[in-house]
Image (tube, rainbow, N blue to C red):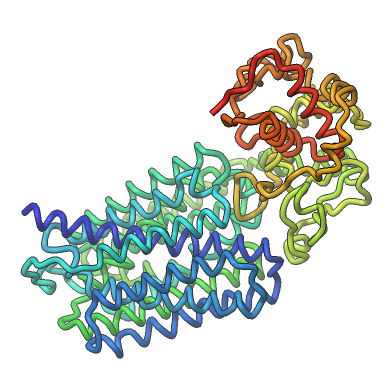
Amino acid sequence: MIRQELAGWKAATLVAITYVYFLIFAQFGFLARLAALGIAGDSLKTVMAAMAAGGILFSLLVPKINAATSPALRLRIALGICVVASILSLLPLSLSSATSVAFLIGAGLGILTVTLVTHLHHWTGTCNPVLMIGIGTGIGYFLCNVPAIFTASPKDQALWASGLCAAGTLLATPTRIQLRPASVVQAVPLPFPRALVSFAALVWLDSAAFYIIQHTPALKSGTWMGELHLWTNACIHFAAAVLAALLLQDRRVSLVLACAFVALGSACLLLLDPALTLSASLLYPLGVSFYSVALVAYPSYLSGAETEQQRARLTGWIYAVAGWTGSALGIGMGQNLGHVPVWFVLAAGIAILLPVFLRQVRVNAREVGLLCAALVIAYTLTHWLPAHSPNSDSAVDKGRQVYISEGCIHCHSQYVRPNTQDVLLWGPAESLEQLHNQQPPLIGNRRQGPDLSQVGARRSTLWLKAHLMDPVQVSGDSIMPSYAFLFRDNRGESLVAYLASLQNPFSTGEQRDTSAWRLAEPAWTKANPAIGEQVYQRDCKTCHEADGATRTKWSASFRQPPSNLLTGPFKHLQPSESMQAYMVHIAQIAKFGIPGTDMPGHEYLSDSKIASLSLWLAQHATQPFPHS
């Protein structure tokens, strides 16, 4: 029994690794990497088409070579390809090399998914195999929504994915338990054509909704922004995956697919109204986990396939048609339409639910008739009730209107110029296609203040609010007027919500790679402590002294109290042996701030002023810096 349970956990881990690699890297981190490389528009479509082509081709080829190699060897080869592809994505890729890497990602996933699912019984043993699939799927989605992983840089996400796949090669050795794959779950098979259509429709809905949320700041702010949202999504994913597995163990494949559609279809419809994004954010992970468990459990145990060759062919077609093609069509719908049309949700519902409904009609004709009559009565009554149309705009939408009405576009741009210093100062550039999708685009007339296209990644909501109310208090040389009057009603909070939503569409964490930035040597040579003191008095004292104006006014709102720069303690300085190393670290913090806190960057300060400030602070700190 112990060996069986260990075998089951081995299978769950392999399923989790596969989902993490596909979700956090192939469909998320890799896209962010492409955006950082400036690959967008038609070029992006070419790269993603190559990934889909690799996935479809090898999903269909694996059943042809099913008997040529052992499942364990094919699994190790597939995981090795995935490791290589994720590492290659970190190189400075051109369009052609990115296309090749994308094809390699698709090929690795095609071999991995079909091999693992076809021969999953080699790793699950006989101890609740479908439940182990559900646990593995739930763990995979849970990990993908952990804030530290979800908001990590594309480089870190690629390393995460490659590390997990490398670890997976150690689990590829099959169990020695005597297996009975055809009898592990005595299923009443769902006809393959119905299963294929249902999975294709669900993957299509999922991919379209995911793309739309990721590329619509107002929707993303209500679904995947903030640790609370992400942890909630993670828990829903895991609970839904386990529940789906329990239902599938009782041979309720049609019920699981129907529940997945109801949740996903409802989420797509709710996304049409930004005010309902919270409800959509709860239903979306529920539907995704439900069908994702079935996507593994059906071909591996519940299809009725009697031989491994039959199971391999069935699995290959499901992942080629439903998985890769459905995903590509869903992303295309999101790109071209920006929403999931109601007619498509209805068509998907007919394809998935109609056979279930007809069966229920035959078995429970009287009950179904009463239900239909109740629905007709309820629909009729809604037309007798007085109409009520409350203002349903979300805070982000309202804030965007405030931004426009107050003329913010006259001083602030929302366009990072590609391949310029802008990328380091303000964050990654958006493609022209993304800008055109805004209604209306807010590129701006000129840039008297900083660019705001990624300001939500650089500034906390507290800083944004304090700056709007009294700009000079937190930015000593600011020429921006006070907008405190907006906070007499809800306009100020709405504007803060909108500004906080302005972040890179592929990440919610720190957007810029600033690790390689260093002050030029001439700046250190010309550093003047007197100038540094002026900068401190103007820009730093307000938060970093006990009686500072901003510290006094907002003391209860800081995520953590700012350090006193003269007396310590220095919470964010790493131990070092040299004062020069501290000055370099102080310069980095002064220039770009501290992610996850209310400490902003001062990107507009010149190198000489940053060096002067660092020198003055190093000279006047009364508490010694920590030494290693």
